Image (cartoon, rainbow, N blue to C red; front, side, top):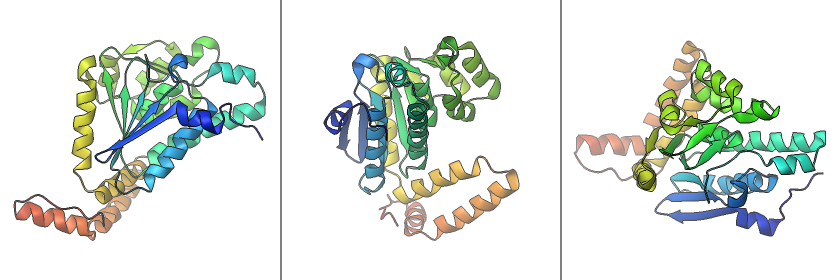
Length: 268
């Protein structure tokens, strides 16, 4: 079995976590490597996300990067130092597991992007439910430039942006600006660098104010229906609406709307 390159003690340092007011912040903390996704960092991310999933007090997750950039993708030095098929399989299977963990998390996940988000870093942005970026941020899937097509990043990218734009990023391998990333739908907003924290905090606050049960039902339904054909999607989402309507939070929310008061969510 292949062991992660960072031991358990180091793994606690390469990912920082801070919880406040219903928001869990996860900071990728390998700034000298532009927060490259080593096995240790991916493992730490998965473990923290799985812990967060079971905590009803946490309503939203923010993923950000320390240092000069968000995430430069996989750790190429680690990959070259372990050039066996087995290591490559472990790496990309773990990356796929990380992305699925983000998607399946009951809480919404916001990517807070500054600097660069490239390759698997761009994949992480595309996988998060929402993404806010500094106007100076840059995005790319540049693997083609070094003989390694960004095939796993392509999964998230091709589901986040139109096909022609996704293929241009994948084949061209060039950086795109935050405004272009917003235009094609890779991110929600591009804001002034000094306004990024405020924009993310504002959105996180809006999410925290919503029913966590409703968000859980809705997020799961969104990702399950999106790859169904139209008829199947309507059938599935109609059943999701029935389940949601039977929840106590839906009853409370509707009553509060009718009575012109703020709802009190119970999470059931």
